[in-house]
Amino acid sequence: MCAEFTGVQDCQTRCVRDPGDKKHACLEACQTAFSTACDRAFPASGEGGSTNFKICLSYLQTSCEDTCKKFRA
Image (cartoon, rainbow, N blue to C red; front, side):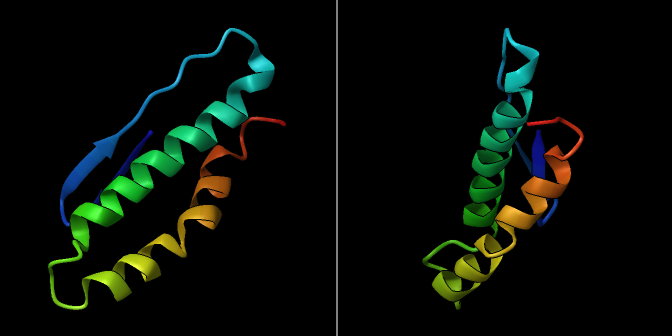
């Protein structure tokens, strides 16, 4: 699972034994990659960093749900 902002990819992986855990693992990897990518793209020290970081994170849930919807819960 990778997230990319400003041309840099942040990737995470998760392994599962039970296929029923794939959606949870996908969501966890997505959330971690997405938040890391937001942090890299909008550091607190940058202009408007905190505000832009929060805006970026506001897309996390929808984006990760869309990305991981192929795995049934």
